[in-house]
Image 1: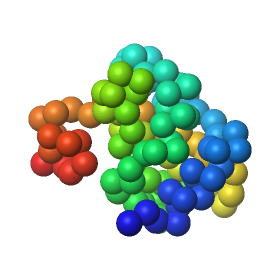
Image 2 (image 1 turned 30 degrees about the vertical axis):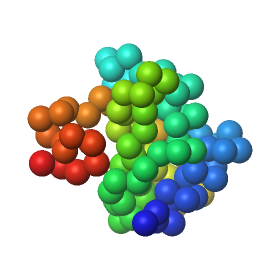
Image 3 (image 1 turned 90 degrees about the vertical axis):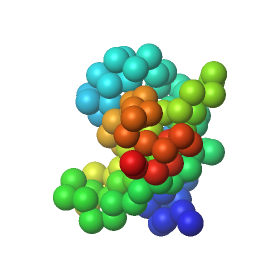
Length: 107
C-alpha cells in the first residue's frame, strides 16, 4: 500500500519538480547509477518503507531498477516544511547480504 508521501513525490517527479542532494550524487557515482534512471524509475518504483515523521521531513525508501534491471534503492523525501521539490536523498545498490532476494525486506 502506497503512502501519501510516495504519491506526492511521484506526482512532483512526473512534472519535473525534483532535485538531488549532494550525498545522493556521491552515492550514485559510487554505484554507477544515472540521475536520469533514478528520476525515470520513480514512476514505477515500489515503496518499501515510509518515514512520515523523519526529522528532516517525510521520506520513503523505494525499490527501483536501472535500465539493465538491476535493483537500486532510492530514498526520496520532502524537506521539512516544504511541498516541493521532491529530493533524492540517496540512491545506492542494495547489499544482497542485508536484503531478501527480491530486495524488498531487510534481513
